[in-house]
Length: 324
Image (spheres, rainbow, N blue to C red):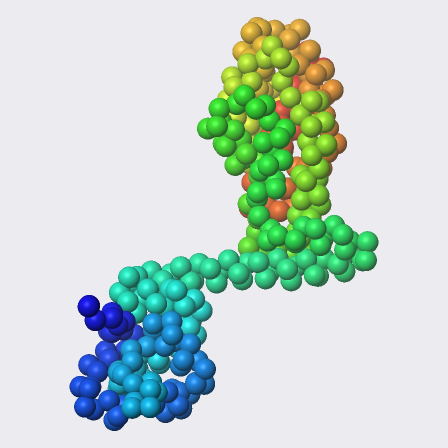
C-alpha cells in the first residue's frame, strides 16, 4: 500500500522550508499539539483544525495515540497564519502550500477582491449618508438599491428590454455599453441617491415596455441600419458638445437624418426632415429624460453620453426645420 501523501514544504518566499521529519525513534522529541499551539500563539483547536485540513505535517503519534509534530510544523503553522492574516481563504492557502498555486497570483487575486469590497463599503457609506438628503421616506428607495452590491446589471437589463430584440448581439452590446454609466468607485451621497432612483426606474418592467412601444422603430424600419447610423451621429454630436458648440445644422445633424432616412428607405428631403422633427418631438419620454439626467450625475468624467447627444441633435433638427 502506498504511503499517505503529506503536504509539500512551504515555498521559499514564505519563510524557511520545513526541516525533514525526524526518524521514528525521535518522534517523542517533537511538539505535542499543546506545545505547538503555545509556541505559535494559537489555540489547540486551531492547530487541530489546520492538521485535519492537511495543512500541517504530522511527525507521528505518541504511544498514547497523541499527535506529535516535527520541527518544520512550527514554521508551517506560522506560514499559514501569515497567509490567513492577508485574507486568503483556506483553500487558497492549501493550494500555495501544496505547490498548486503561486503566491504572487493568489495575493493579486486577494488584492482585487479587497478593492471590490472597499468599493462596496464606500457605496454603503454614501448610501447611509444619503438618508440625510431624503429622511425616512427614502428608506425603501435606498434600501432596495443596496439589496445587492451596486452594479450595471439592472441598468443593462433595462436597455435590453427597451431595444428591439432583433438587433445583432454585437450591436446590442455596444449600445448597452454606451448607455449604462460606469459607477464611481468613491460615490458622494448625491450619487448614491441618483443610483437608487436610477435603479428604481430601471427595475420597472412595465415602464420599460411602455418606453419601448413609444420610442422604438416602426415595423417597416430597418432597426439595425438605423442604430448603426445613429451611433456615428451621436459620436459627431459628442464632438460638438465637447467643443461647447450650440445645436446647429452640420455634419452631425446630416448623419442623424440620413440614418433615419436610410432605415426607412426614404430620401433626405425638407419634407422628410419636417416629418422626422415632428416624430422626434412626439417620441419624447420624460422617463428617458430622467434616466439620462440621473446617469449624468453618476458620470465622473463629464463626457457626453447618448442622451445628451440625442438631445443636441433633436434641438438642432427642430431649429433647422423652423429656420428653413
